[in-house]
Image 1 (cartoon, one colour):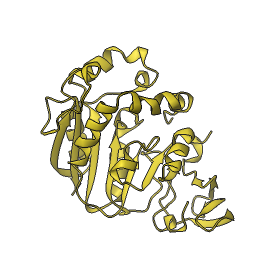
Image 2 (cartoon, one colour):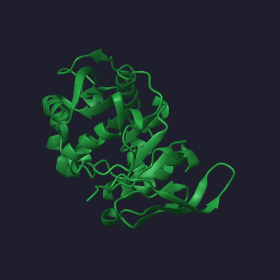
Image 3 (cartoon, chains in turn cyan, purple):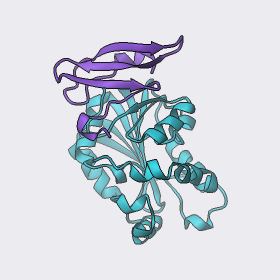
Length: 210
Length: 60
């Protein structure tokens, strides 16, 4: 079952987080931006209220939550209700597919990755932004899991687990960027963005369809 | 939804082509209607400009 309940109930709480944590949000956008190749047609899966798709110039967005998608639509996104595991698109429809803090909410990550491969053009890029399970923020999210209306339903992944899943789904040519090098409460300014992974809590993986 | 979304939309179950039936549209886009998959015999509604492409068992 698609995990939409907290997103329907706490839509404002979700969307306000980005205003209340602007330096964190802007740092994550920075790590995504430098890891995105030029593309013609892009889709964000789990687009939510459009907080990432809009500034990154992605036009199409899929999400199962009506309240979230209505906000995204008002922000200019062409929204479609759907789930990642059963995408409503023809084969080879996009050059770029993005997921940001979405993999932790998927019901079946393997089916979702297979679907992304199917809808990407040959040599299309799959960009995944997520909190590394083994990072300091990742560890604190797991400790606080029961207390967060969003994260109590989440499954966190390490970079190694994501890469393994991507490889077995037919992706290769990995490139990593990272940011968020301190605790979220200590971040008052934009965090640096670096290549690689293992130091920053927010990691962006770019992989190419083989 | 804009009409050119039909170029890439497909049935979420069989990935086959869909037949568009428009109930209401303005100069910019389709406001309401249905998308029909003849192979699966399923209708997917378009409401308030957004196509609902959730598989039937996941709809509210």
